[in-house]
Structures are given as C-alpha cells and as structure tokens.
Amino acid sequence: MSKSVNNIRLESVYIDGVRNLSAQRLLMSPGINLIFGANGSGKSSIIEALSLLSTGRSFRSSSVRSLIQHGREDCVVQARVESGNAARSLGIKRTKTGELTLRCDGEPVSSLAEFVAQVPTIILDPSSTDTITGPPEPRRRLIDGTLFHVELGFLDVWRRYQRLLKQRNAMLRRGMMRGQDPWLGELSRVGSILTEYRVNLVSRLEPIFQTILAELNPTLADAELVFRPGWDSSLSLEAGMARSAESDAAQGFTHVGPHRADLRLQWQGRAMAEVFSRGQLKLAVIALRLAQGRVLAASEKGAPLYLVDDLTAELDGPHALQVCRMLEQTHSQVVLTTVSELAAEPSWMHDVAAVFHVEQGCVSAVADNTSVIKT
Image 1 (cartoon, rainbow, N blue to C red):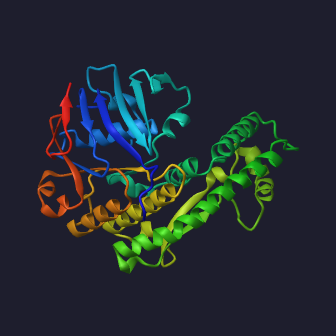
Image 2: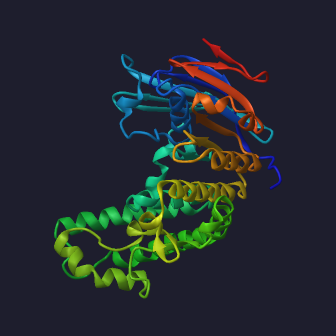
C-alpha cells in the first residue's frame, strides 16, 4: 500500500487528569509508538486518553467519573494533529458532572460529530473480542463508525432514521398507533437508504477481512461476514414493518428495522463465537479492524490512527509480531502497549519508531528521536 499524503498523525499529546496521568506531554513518532510498563503503571491510560480525544469517550468504561483522576474534578487531553500539509490543535475536557468542552485551534466546537471526525481511529484492546461474541450493538457501531468517516451523506441519513424511530416509538408507547401509521412510509424509506449504505460497506469489508485473516492463520480461510438488515430480508422494509405493526402497537416499540441490524462473523457456516478459541477470536477481530482501517485509508482522509492496547493478550509472540508487521505496512501512526519483557526483544524493535516507558503515571522516552516532557 502506498503512503497517503493525508495520513492522520498526532505530533504531540498532552494528558492531564486521566486516571494516574498528570501533566504528561508526549512527542510522537509518525510510525509505531511502543509503550511499555508494568500492569497498573498507566500505559493503558495513555491509550484511553487518546481514545477520548478521537472518539469523545473511553474505550474501557462508560463512566466519566472512573476516567478522571481521584481528587480531580476534570481531565484534559490536547493534541497537535497533522494531516497532509495542514496542522491543527484539538482539545477535549470532561468533568465529573458530565460537562464536555471541545476546542479546535482554540475555538469552541459545539458538535461532537464534527470533533471526532478530525481523527479517524481504530481501537484494539483485550475486550475487542466482545465485538464478535457480544450483542449486535458493537458490530453496528463498527459499521456505522466506518461509514461516518467514508460516506459524506451517511450521518444525515442515520440521524434522520434515529429521529423518526424515536418519534414512532413515542407514539407507540402512548397507544396512538392503533390503525393508520403516519411514520411507516418515511421511516422505511430512510431505513432502506441506511441499509444500502451498510450493505455496500460490508461487501467492501468482507474480501479484505478474509485475506487478512487467512494471512494471520491459513486454517481460518473460510471466514465470512454475514449482514442481517434487521428484518425478514425476503420482504421490503416497509412490508416487514407493516407485518410487525400489531405487535409494535401492543408492546410499545418498533420491533424490526435497521436499528436491529447485525453483522455475523462465521466460519464454515457456523458462528465464530461458537467454534473459535480465544486466540482465534482475537485474530478475527484484528483482521476485522485492519480491514476497517484499509477502507478508511482509501477515503479522502487517509490512513487512520491505530490504538492497540495489550497486543499480546491471548496472542503468542509470533502472531503479535505478525500483527505488528501488518500495522507497519498500513503506513499509519500506531500507538501500542505491551508488557516490559517484550519491549526488550530485538524483534519488536525492528518495526518500532519510538519507545516510551511508563512507571507510576510518569512517561519517559527511551528512543533517540522522541522525547517526553513532564510539565
């Protein structure tokens, strides 16, 4: 893959008040940045801070209070971001009371969607296998999060569908939908457009996913992505919704539609969650995320930022190194954490551009071409 001139790169990052990190400033390499340290040292907190900057939320917890350092009322993450020949500053502040402050080049940003669009990001962490084994929502979020960055009109369609669905459900709860359904036509029209976006994306993801997974483990070559739209696919969405109208009215919510869509990961016709080991599931989710990254890289925004926490969890050394090679080939900026023992291995250093050590929330650079400043 040729290097894109539009690749996103974090040049510097300032983190204050995220768990045990206080006033830490990192100067990042454009390649692979390896962060090592003992468990509980704060290396995962760096990934968490970067996920807050790029997605507006933590990948580890939905609780803002758990993210913010004990004794603090807020946390702050700031970064200088380069893309092509352009550079800008981003900043996010979260408080324990739930307040959110966003800034771009010093100016307030009112829309979280506008803010997170600045840094397309792929996150891999030990819980990522839940994407395969858990409920459909994380898989829908993966599809929709990719579309958010690569399809200009997607967000408006998604918002329109959510708004119509909320309005219809409110009417259903009030018992006002006994008979004619004024929402059915428009909801099914917008939902069909939303589904078309999703189907097209899955058709792009699947061959890339299959190729990457087969490269990671040739015995897993028969993998497939099966998209389920959220209703009986032998019917149109409008017909499917009309069929469930009676049960919708009785129970007060919309039973079928794109909000019930799912992406099933299968191997030889069976669900991966049922037949794969934990290590195989980890390889599958890595392949899926790397496929997502290649689709993002083909967009105008260029290759995304990769945040990889504890790469060696449930992966042996050779597979971890293979994934590291694949990450290098993306020509993306990568921030990954690992245990201290692996950081000393010469084979890891082959691809790594910068190395940072974390101890009790203090970060220090151990590579010549970067530095960390405690302010």
